[in-house]
Image (cartoon, rainbow, N blue to C red; front, side, top):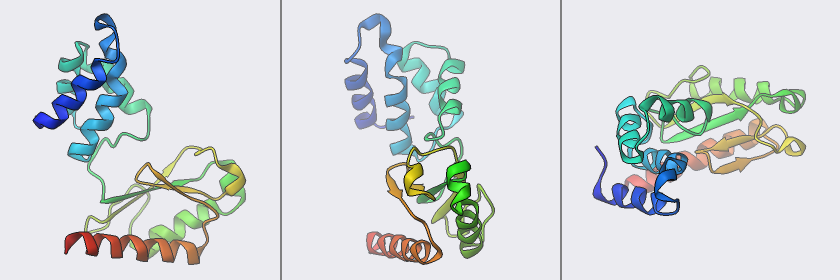
Length: 165
């Protein structure tokens, strides 16, 4: 299921823990698997469970607890928009609605070209910079306005085109 490079990365993570505690590497292994596959499928969970010597349901519990693990295929750019109270008070929902309308998707949807997935998320811990969003679980975008969202979408589209050439 996984490439040799991914299995080697799993082994490096597992080696950080005592042999009887190798399941402690579950989050790292899920992250590595997602980097290779783009999402965590039930088959990936079973394979990780096998590597770590744990029940597949225990891996599933971790996958479903954290929103950083994609439980279905997502676009090249996953846009997590915070809609918790501090962001709501500073137009987080309006930013979400604008982004969905601009891209022609509903909350949780992926654009027809597979480029963008837009979804609500829980607090990102940057309430002073509200409203905020997280791009691909890595890049924080603060003080979202329609203009900033337009610029972000244009920049990400340009990056995608450049990578394709």
